[in-house]
Image (cartoon, rainbow, N blue to C red; front, side, top):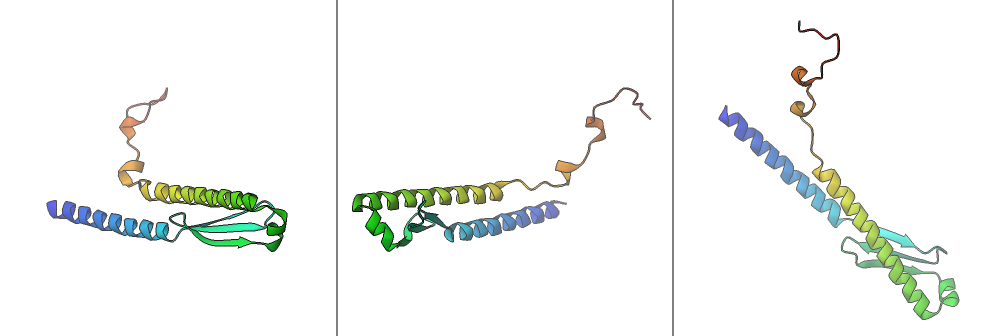
Amino acid sequence: MMADRWSAMLDELSRQRSELTRVGEAMAGLTAHAVSIDRLVSVTVDARGMLLDLTIDPRAMRRLRAEQLSAQITTLVAEADQRLHDQRNQIYTAAVQPTPDYSDVRVDASAQPRRPGDTDG
């Protein structure tokens, strides 16, 4: 049944290729958002950590000096990038989790520990 084994291997290869495509698409579409505690500044970054959107409430410009605002934006971009990192890790982890098959879950009676009172019968 070599043909069956080859067929199973090709099916598995096709499944893995589809999974890689799905993971790649999921990764490419990732974005992350971070908002300041006072909710006056927010950022959105893309899958590469590049700034896509920056929103600054006019009140932030009155409350903060330029260097404070700059530091807050930098901190928010780093927070959003860390969220992207966490999202990527979740996707990778889900993608590489082995899928159990029958041989992984079947019970082998000979491997079961014997209890007092068990008989061979």
